Length: 255
Ligand code: PGA
Image (tube, rainbow, N blue to C red):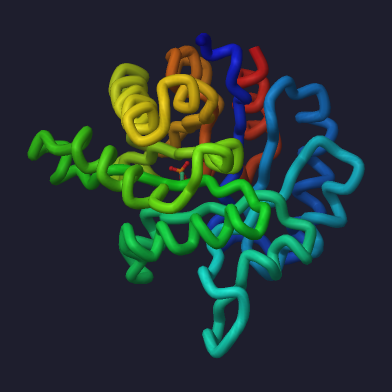
């Protein structure tokens, strides 16, 4: 099977940026710029912006995602949001296991797995983030580490739910640093992820899964990164806050 069998997905990750009013303005600016996209376009926004984002994106090709979810359906979890709540709010996607959640908020491979399972059970598409720290790359353990993160994150996800899974390879050293992985580095690890999926599920199942690269992807380097056979899209932080830059990346993925 070829790359053409998979959906290219460009997803913005706004992180802790934008108020509801700014959300409406930015999505209104983006809508015409991405209207002719030949890829899926997703914006993952802060919880507080979801209502405004869903409203602004109505009738367009932009889908809305959240940046995290809790694994329980409801209960005494102050400050948390469940996957069912996200669905009820009109959300279609959710990021799980972003390195900032792992690094600053105690997420582990086990909790990332729980969040991913809950997201998929609720009907969301999970954008599952994996990736190594610079130290781990220097130690030569990137491939093993990313394979392990992928395996643990997907425990309990059956093959017939893989269409609700996107894996985002995000080397931590490239996130928000302006330092991008080379296209060769991105391709190598995305291929490792696909081989891991083939091992857990089956080669044909693995061919159908969208694998993104994330980490300082921008209007200038998207073309090159997305040209690689196993890089099916991008998870975009900084450049997703600028309509013009984001739309250039969407165009690169639409080729
Ligand atoms: P960046 O963020 O594009 O700003 O590096 C990517 C991400 O964290 O998903």
